[in-house]
Length: 184
Image (cartoon, rainbow, N blue to C red):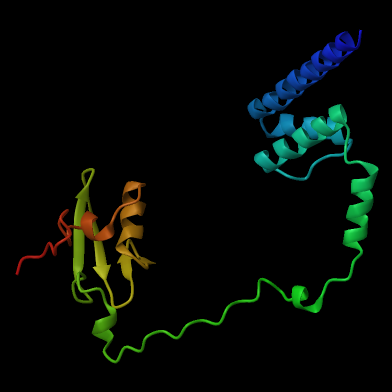
């Protein structure tokens, strides 16, 4: 008789686990409005979040908590005990405190700081892409494309193509082999 009761308990537990997996799996197909409605249903209050992964996790936790029970009284008491403890002074330091910055290497000549693959300041580099010619003015510390300043040629190449590119390669300043593409 004992083995029959044990088998029934396992069967019930398996059914609960299948139901739980089904309910949690269904959350993946829900959009924001449906998730927020489900959140209201399981928590009894509206969610202010619009973060889909966060809402799915919170709802899944709550569904599991409702089906299997939440934290034990002992666990809740231990959490209360730990949260009321005084934190040692060394642990109270703000971990977001910025680290001291390493000094930048001093450059005595401004030309040393420039990438040697770049043409001199004031030059114009261009590239035809999808039937349009795109021109970029090279300046000492930035690049100007369509009246807007950019920090790198790669950012401009991405603006033009919509995909990440090596700016030197896109504008023909280097060859695919990595060498200098300019004629000597």
